[in-house]
Length: 341
Ligand code: DAH
Image (cartoon, rainbow, N blue to C red; front, side, top):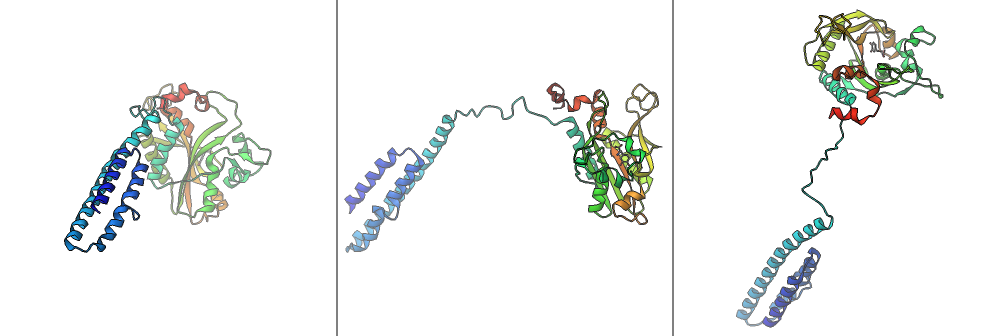
């Protein structure tokens, strides 16, 4: 039996020596240590040895041979696995020293950058972000905002009419009634998105531009609440304490309605070209939600009221980065876009 074990051991050594891949090592392991291996048989046959000393000695030798084989297999496995990874790397011609990001990495559009910033400020004040359709019914874009058919206020916004009797939304205010119908007060939402108007293009008019609508409905809301939220929002956006003032402004869906101005960021209020010497910049229309709009949204105006604002996101981006021509924003010119990395 000793000779048999010796031959077995030698056969193993020469096979394992020649093994090159993890698969070969695994086959050798099965052949030399598996249930059907010779060493397993020998171990089983020990019982047939009659001399107890011989029996004990054989048992010892077989076990230590088995342990040695196991140890050699583990060592070999580690070596061939490492080699196989190295082989794969060199076959794929991978250069692990290349930089992960190329110098021609993309960047966010300036509108996206500012939109995310405004979203983060307003969600920080408890507003949730909602989304609305760009292709809209006249009902949500006008009627539910207290602008009936044939009312002259429809002419305030030149509209794209579609062949399916729908329109392209002219403002993000379409999200007002849509949100009121779905959620009950207290309601605090913002709706960022694209709007469309049938405009003649020039440096400050585009057919597609971005707004962020804001709407808050609760009990006992008043104009000071509106001013407080606007002041915090604008101070955060411009990273300085801004002064605001309200002037009356007409929008059918708010009563009273306002144009909100901030003191000029360039001259600080002394008067300059940007503010046309007035010391103020017109920034954001807003107002207290009209009772009719609440009714369209199935909310009782006797119990609830609120405020709304329409932030001109595209305009804000132009102010923030000093972009003089709105057409650059939708132009897709990489020389322009690459500046916002
Ligand atoms: N939707 C208006 C527009 O695009 C802007 C606006 C004015 C929105 C007053 C409001 C608001 O929420 O209260 O001209």
